[in-house]
Image (cartoon, rainbow, N blue to C red; front, side, top):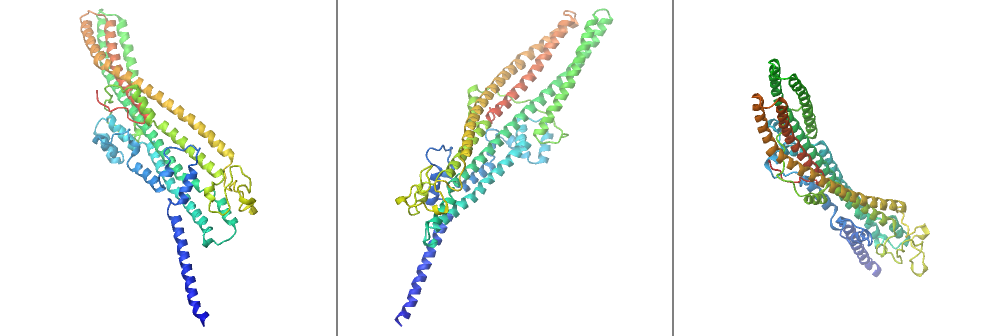
Length: 523
């Protein structure tokens, strides 16, 4: 009777103890599966940050979760972060043109309003460039890799739960070999702490490719706009010069018929007329080609009408050469891409080194009698009392994890890192040289614009008028009059060419710096 009366109490005690034990185990599982800031995760991040291994800046895996990395990239996409420095959306006309670029009807309406200015063309190019659109979608696609890296984090969480299961009452008091197998079969959780960082760097690389595509699209749009304007200007000048030459030919023929002139005057004028007619055809072809380039970068149909191009805006003075060089060093897309490539290679090296070396002592500290051997140790080293290493009977070698990286692969990565460092140095030199060349072209063009528009053209017009009156009264001969006319033609053409050179200098500066070099002002 006494034994029977004690049986319910014993059963109740066992039931309570079992319930409490299971609840405690479930709490542990929730802890390890639910958070990244557990002691195990910190231990793995510390392993990923082992001394002596170069770390990129910033060390994202130690400072942000995968959700934070992805949210930051998505925020940059939504805020059009890639346009920073390239397009000033605070200007109402620029923002209106940029927004119109996303709608075909609004784009057509903008094109029909009148001659396009440089700011509107650049805004449309940023919104409509096929190359930039493709690069932007590539950025979006790459950002999705960050979320995919969460699967590796889940594998790490599964490993946490498995390791804890073998070390609690739920795992029983079985032999140490299964625990060692768990350690050996999953030696790489620390490498997954770097997978999010690698995905973030790949997204950063995609962003820089987008910035490079945008910079090139805006540079092409600026050049095509200026070329179309310059060709249209030459066409207009030639169309105005031809009637004058034909009238001169009639005067020369009349003078020759009256015995007052020489036949060579008439022949020279006829030669100039034929040469100018050829130049007129060339100008029309140049304008057609430039407009085709402009339609291509704006993603317009080949037959889409353009209402002309306004005078290309030119800064009042060129920025200093040192300022352009500093801008190239700070924001050049080609330099930024080389930097991201080097950082990605260094992260890959760290992942490979983690996976190819034995576990640190702290990673196996909970296994009784186990201590991870030194690099290159043999099976059984590091064990106290000469005991065999856990898992030795199964052929496990703590010093040589199952999932390791061959040394040849690491040698390849290190060589690629050296190559990436050289590429970075070359990119910096190239961007600096391009920025200085852009400054030379822009500074020369601005000076030539001032000379042509303020001095050469007014004086040539005045000299031609004087020569025309003197030729009519017989004070000067035909050769001198024709020379005065040629000076006027060259002066007007030089003014057009100088503005075209300035636009090309600004386009080169955009490619070199990844930013608009100056705030433009109509001169």
